[in-house]
Image (cartoon, each protein chain N blue to C red):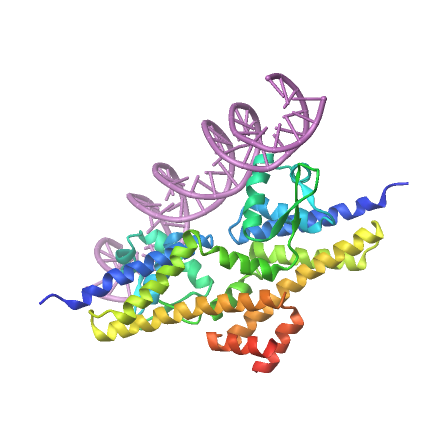
Length: 178
Length: 178
DNA sequence: TACTACGTTTAGAATTTACTAAACGTAGTA
DNA sequence: TACTACGTTTAGTAAATTCTAAACGTAGTA
């Protein structure tokens, strides 16, 4: 008799390709999406070598992408006593990952960008000079932008703190507010 | 006497660079961020040629990026009677833009990716074959993923419908839920 | 010490991206 | 009709990205 387990392979592959596409859409490497998908669909943590054989990427690529995914909190390293291999498992709480990603902004390029908005706002609010009406207009616009970033941040924090925000929760929020 | 209005220029430039950085961080062209920033800081709609002179990009680049920004709902074309030029102004409700961007997914690559998750879920729920335990595991994981996408979508809809979701609103939500 | 089994880093290739410069299409105007 | 003023498209280019292949570093083991 044929091993019936095999009938799930094509379904897995379909999802791997789907997540690769989503990854690419958001500007991440396609391989990164594939790696995450493999881990997300694996019932048990996978080693780097298992990822190599299942994704077709080389060790180097896996190594790099896996580190990036871990920095974003989308996967977690797992070490086993007496086993030199590193294993990885997928984070299943996506909201927590979003939060991690937003925290990550405290370093790097994104951080300086956000900080620059904040700093521009302060300069506009405290400084003098420039034509009054234009200054007021700019201040208002920059303030709105700054508020937006803060709101997103707060919302992501909230979602992570609630350990996820299901469809039901979102619908409750809607009901309360409308 | 020197024109004092000029003292606002460096502040504008700082923000333009900040938004360019944010744009790049999210995987969009830097120039796209710059164009949006110019429009967002302009008290009145700007023409394509004004954008050319203010950003230093060429007409072609502006034309392309402006179209992409409009598709995402981050800017809007403005036409004036008896004026052949096209003008553009920035959308100031960012939540509405997010919503537009998520609607945009109904075409293109992202659409097919999201649809594939949905379709995989259906196959898993209705189909047979494969080992029972593994099938159950996969179904659960894919269902969680699908729920996540739906929740994000619902939340973005809500925010757009409320015409924005300020810091205050987010804090109210938090209070209610915690 | 040498050997093995790992993960990481590097050099370079292939691909993709984001732009420029210039040709092009088109709608209004004389 | 030709002319002008615009936006769009195209061909080509420079730079960045993402990978491969292979060298490398290192920690355990004999």
